[in-house]
Length: 303
Image (tube, rainbow, N blue to C red; front, top):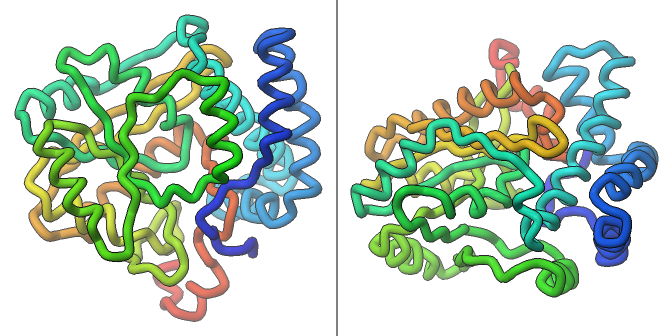
């Protein structure tokens, strides 16, 4: 299987510059057109990612071999679109897209309670544009994102020159756990704390749960934290429906105090539901299920 996720996404500043140039010079259509070739390139030269994606479609979605091959290509293409869209929306082209809010009343209700809230998402769709949705909420919404800050600094520096300054506050995970104080401070200011719950980094604490009929490791932190803090917990996904339309799904989690495993189970059920609707938008291009290892460590009844 493909390698474990190492905490960094693939990409170069040069690649981003090419797409931004096409988008600004020739329009979004030109940037999308270029993606046809880039997606083809990744199918052959991002071997580990392609292998992991093929496994997802073939084994977890039970697609035929031919359909799995085509879906790997289409998944790369849609992923590229979300990156282009993120840059376009963040640089002031938000009005080029349409948006549908589904379950936004849960976010408004959480903000009205003045306790803050935790939003748990995943690397599906285009969650990074969520802040542009939240500007239209009834209550003023300020967002903090809990992150390892592992994105390539050169890419971040370049994107800062072509996009508007984000209102999002980044809370970096620290080994001394000092980020816990920042989290509590953000929640006390009635902010929304955003966390992704689907990327376990080897060597960190984890929980085991089933996703798409196969056991996998999930980072323990998001679910332990959300189950201990007495604040609303919501599952949020921003999914691409057409070239110019996004759909924000918000679902309320039923949280039992200190029961991280039950919260994780609810999360995987929610994530399964989203992937049934948008199977191409699973963007975890690594050995997510660690199938060879789980076959050794878990009984066949869990497979």
